[in-house]
Image 1 (spheres, rainbow, N blue to C red):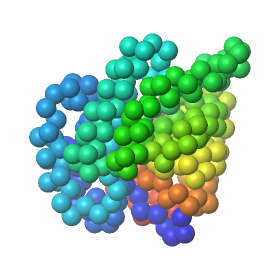
Image 2 (cartoon, rainbow, N blue to C red):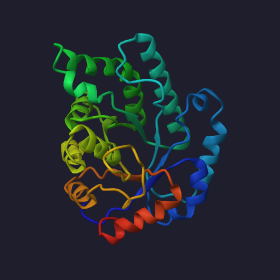
Image 3 (cartoon, rainbow, N blue to C red):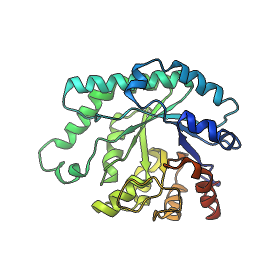
Image 4 (cartoon, rainbow, N blue to C red):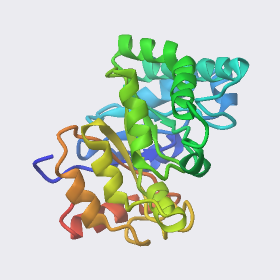
Length: 272
């Protein structure tokens, strides 16, 4: 990125109604988080899609959604579980088609346990990748046809390269990498992972999405930016070296502090 980046946010439709004017005043990216629950995806979500399109009249940023993740992993060994996950991802792609989104956030299969055990059993690294391919194969093909990208977000990931290698294994424009700064900071503070900017450097130009949240290195706080101990100057310095133009998405619990989080970055001369 060669100029001061414009920051967007993650919101539900209810949040969007409150912050719509802020969102459309600049080309801010949006990540919709109203299509995560199984009950929503199994029900009649078309009215929500209609409402989304109306609320986004005048929107000039890039639109994505957070995909479903509750209750499953994307590398299950159980073929019946894989079928459920494949169904959920297909439903999420249906939502993308309906609202005009072209990015879906999905969760990494790597855990803290993985870091210590992937090399304990022969072939375990390969099995994680194989099972993930079995789960995502149909979704990746459909996403390619739609021009949509699934970005894999770190959750417990201690080694920032595991997820990068997984994304690379698909050799597809429909699979890329996401970083959650608070998750990375938790892993750094609590499990001995590298600092957040190392996650950015490890992802390189495969990075197409980042959740910006502050934290203390102990828990998944989702605090407003400036309320925790993430080294934002280091994070944005690493981001400035990329050419992939990742979506910079503020994802915090108190949505009323979204503008204050942007003001904090602006005061540091990092973003607007």
